Image (cartoon, rainbow, N blue to C red; front, side, top):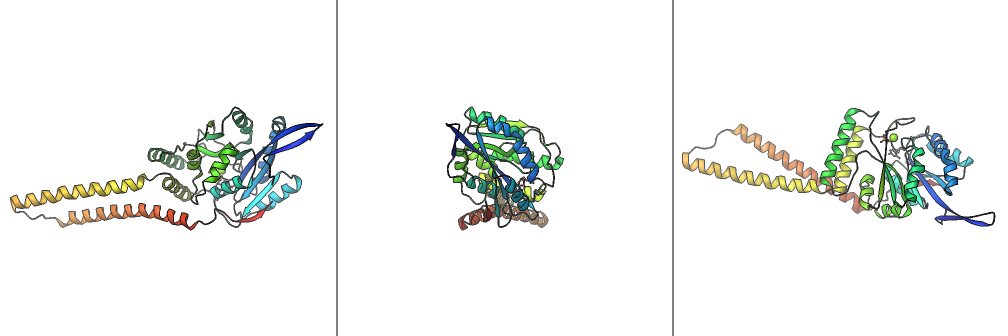
Length: 326
Ligand code: UDP
Ligand code: MG
């Protein structure tokens, strides 16, 4: 890997300052897409030349069980610009993004999915905005074409709730497809948390961001790695990592129930004193006990979630482990 961010090439006696663009591609079982991605990316070759951009393509193999690594190796034999960092097991896309930012030294870094859902043809336009002075150019899809309606519905709900309860701006439909300057990449690297919710981290670091919108593109080959359950857990991670409102909610709920109980006690005392009428009806009492018990467990669960995340953070385990690096 290059130590210098800029590479100086001598061309016909003149010094040409080439900027380095690092393309980071997290891959998990993407053997069918590795070569297609390479071909699509370097379709922009004339653009890279025109802008005097040196390109390095870094595949991050997130513990794939198929031939992803072999495919990257084959590409490397043909082209020195191809690099690989493979993990000892599957650590998740968030870890792959972190590893990619850490491995690359480019003046600009772009994060892209291997399945070509992040069209490389958008790159020239994104780079234009960077030239105009933006620190980062992010993309969001305006349609969710090709996605099951139930998944879209829950995704929308998640963004709505998230933006209500978190101060960090998390944009609906935002993809991880992002071109950023080294400064932004370093800011993201400075956030060394173990539970990484990248969409929130992008929002948290700030910097001037230009949003580009595009129609959803369906995955070229293979299948999505996100089951409904995995997405649910990921959304929980996002909420816990970027909001403490659930904790406040638990406290408020507790306080409300105390007030309610106090009022009811007074009502019962007054009723008994005035009418000497002992309160009857154990079934309703059982329901109330069950309900309050449920609320207590729910609040305890919220607390447990924060505690478990804190537990993982204090262990300070590495975000990923490397198996191969070239
Ligand atoms: N990915 C990864 N590790 C994982 C899951 C996914 O590196 O544990 C990569 C995957 O190979 C792809 C990108 O993250 O390049 C996005 O994954 P996918 O296309 O499955 O997600 P979707 O586009 O359906 O949200
Ligand atoms: Mg995809």
